[in-house]
Amino acid sequence: MSRKIIFGPPGTGKTTRLLKIVEEELSKGVAPDRIAYLAFTRKAAQEAVQRAMNKFNVDKKDLPWFRTIHSFVFKAMNYSQDEIMKPKHYSELSEIIKVPLVSVTSAEEVGVSIHNNEHLHIYDLSRARGTTIEHEYDRFGQLDGGVAKTEYIVKSLQKYKDTMHVRDYTDLLIDFVNDGASPKLEVVIVDEAQDMSWLQWKVIDKIMQHASRVYLAGDDDQAIFDWAGADPTRLIKADHWDKEVLEQSYRIPKSAHQIADRLISRITQRQPKDWRPRKYRGFTNSYAYRLSSDSFDHGQWLILTRTNYLLDQIEHDLRQYGHYYSRGNQPSIAQKLYTAVRAWHKLQTKQEVSLDEVKSIYYYMTVGQGVKRGFKGMNIQTMPGQLFSYQELKDKYGLLATANMPWEHALDKVPSTRSIYLRAIMSRDKSELKKEPRIKLSTIHGAKGGEADHVMLLTDLSRKADEGFLKNRDSERRVFYVGATRAKKSLHIIRSNSSREFTEIFQ
Image (cartoon, rainbow, N blue to C red; front, side, top):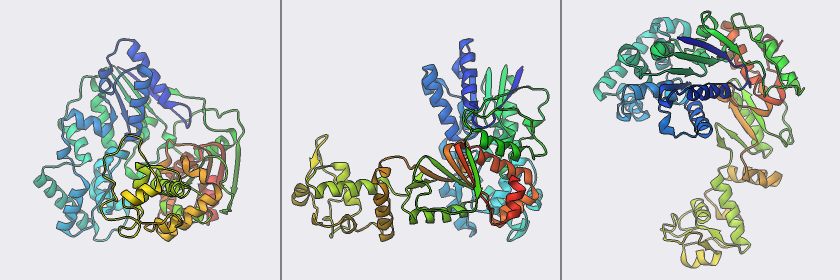
């Protein structure tokens, strides 16, 4: 068996390199369904599938094993969706045992299970790491009700799953390791291998048992999911594997590379890598947080924080100055609202609007005040491309609002705070609303794999994150390394309120 690890520092084209391997294997005559491409997140898996389809002129059905690890197991074990725990199941169990339980994010989506309940989190960690609940409890700290409450919730969960004949995503992995059989594969490619847990490694070990060639790709320096059980040591200690380091970054400028290198060189246990930045110098600066009305007037921005609570303050400031932005891929103003405002203006200026525009207008109108009852959905048969004038809407299609009404009054269901904010955006530059937001807000974990011309990185830590930093400095340095390496042109590091934090991380 041929085994190789490909280390891909930030921006070095790791996915491109992996697809090159796929191309080489296909040229050798390997059938597409004998190649497995395993990604950590659904987004990464979908990107790999799409790029492979475009590059190799194949259909999605030709690539049955281009999947997340969880999805691979789901298909290999022939599970159905009816057998998988869903949010409604957690809600139902919560009612039964009188304990708040919400599945916030599925493992299949982001590679790890995320719950709002810390006891369930401990349980997930124990399974992901192959440890006990007691062991993880000692690592995690004190929780309300202690180990006894955790065990009560776990027993209740297991009884519920048995009764309902459902499994969670971690159960799928355990089932596969214990009883599953991998499809016959010739080539196995695993992306973002540094983020895999002990349990996921067990799955990969089983998948690659009979494969002729195995490629692991990742970067231990970007291993930032240790809180979810990730174990990058398998990459670091794989001495018997061939190793390749992608040496040229196509993203990072020299100035950001210097900071990133200083950060990562302080990590005690890592795979040394020599990689080069772009020739472009770029710009870096560090200063106390100060936001002015013109701070983000130009260019693509990515604003990154360690925790979500800091993003709330940033959002408040951006709204105050009328900046259009997105957080978690959700724009700060819904396109539907902007469409409604724009369409109302068209009607006021004697222009015609489409059916979709009419529906947007009616969506924000109160029934009986802006529009007659029964017309809000506009469920009428129309010819493709049909347009409506203000007078037609008023005479035939239930419009009550008068044409001289400002949009804030006509679209009366829009909250006043939202109206004020939208007016502020439009006073700055209404054309911004026609495009994807230039400014994106995210936690560092949420931005992994992303990039922007300009990155603002806030180093302030919450009390809990600060405690985590003191316990595991390497882990936190990796997090800020990932943040710093998203920048393509400029990196702006915002000093924390604690000079110790900033010094410890960046100096």
